[in-house]
Image 1: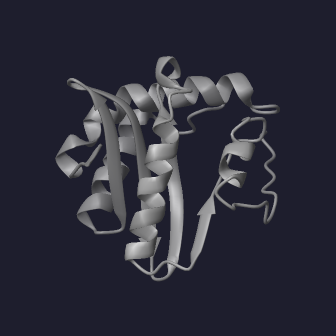
Image 2: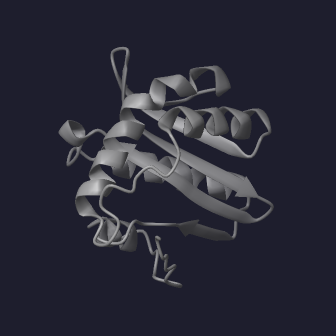
Length: 145
């Protein structure tokens, strides 16, 4: 595992596409609605956030291929586990846990007191986050017209 800089965000493309596919499969109400903007645009925003010092991104690699990543944002004492993605064929091997552990270490390093993660409704990852102490705080509802 290592952290990447803004010039490497393009390497996350396959993980972003895999995450969108996963969200479209598990979403209860919004199948086919992910992503709302292109992966290329999201990755440009990632690079901008890295350059502005808002974000940190860690990747897991197999040779030259990124097989998982975690993006965190830090704003004052608030931390946001913004993205966690592990390629479908690599899931169940503990990579997500390694990435979340990295995120929690970074949050501690920056004295982050409040940490949030947003989960697509229908994604079975809720119990994964609960083992770290995350609990439901609110429900964000959407209406698509």
